[in-house]
Image 1 (cartoon, helix red, strand yellow):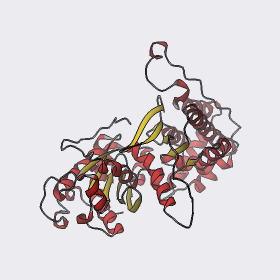
Image 2 (cartoon, one colour):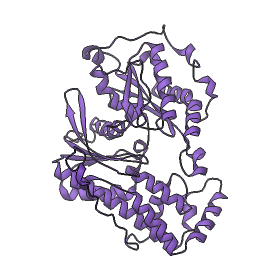
Image 3 (cartoon, one colour):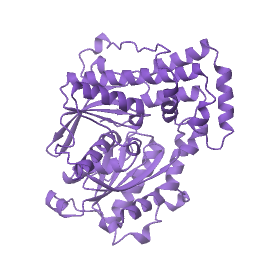
Image 4 (cartoon, one colour):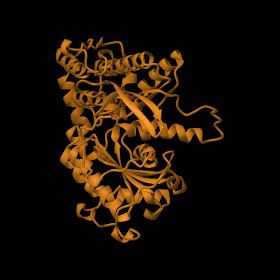
Length: 419
């Protein structure tokens, strides 16, 4: 969608705001249930400017997103300063679009929610400053949401919506608890044991990556091979044309250092590391002298205005396609093995998979097959809600709204926020 000048962010919606600015009273549960149940959520943690209106954490009335892929594609990754500038341009029109799609006005809202972290500091600040200003001007409470919790609620949101459809006649609760949640994206690879609590949810981090996230490995391998950005969809689209057993990638066993063995950190068998497989791909390229074909492919794709994986397919030889397929198979294998090992070890009643990499087709097929074989329910968000979006932030904000967990006036960005 088209952006607006960055100077328009502060005050450009002033004429649309009802009433006088001021602090809002904290509603109790009864007043919350009697209200509209509408939360305007804002997400600017990385390179997507997003806003959504979500009703009672269960139904997304709108989900507007302004993507920056075209801006960052020439660099093969997100440039933080450019991301912040684009958020400034897009935040006002994206919020307007979310309200328009939902058919509501500012006066209809019960609260404003915004991503607090983790993410890029400058990008987070754009959303936070805007949300704080909007909440103050409207006299509405402000809710801070952890981006990682939002990804988990992307699954819960759609499961709730499926359960609300009478024609499906599911006859079962949307998710069985406790749930083992894998959040896997360009910036994160974490395992959480999630439980329902009286006022919402609790999360225990039981696994994480020690270095690169899985999505980052996809992006960097795609860049190395002269493919487009973001790399995940390109790898996903090209992998079916190669032999996933051609290159025997493996992951070394991660061992906890002796002096850290007694700490409360995740068990070593639930830890991930993807820096080694990136190095292995580079070594394969060097040993098989693939640099000339990579340079040729990169130049050809650069000459195409909007290149697609289909354009890249004719530029990839069998050796390259086998490498791509083997890389993807190895990463999915590692994610699958450790996720289900954790689920069984921790007696999880279901498995949730979210984040941008959750849109990967091989991952969905192989995780689903494993879950069926083990008799474990499994759920993914739709591809649209797998990547960063504001609907998931609005869904995660609702339990906090009911519990009166509102952000303080000094709320600021938390780039390294943990869950």
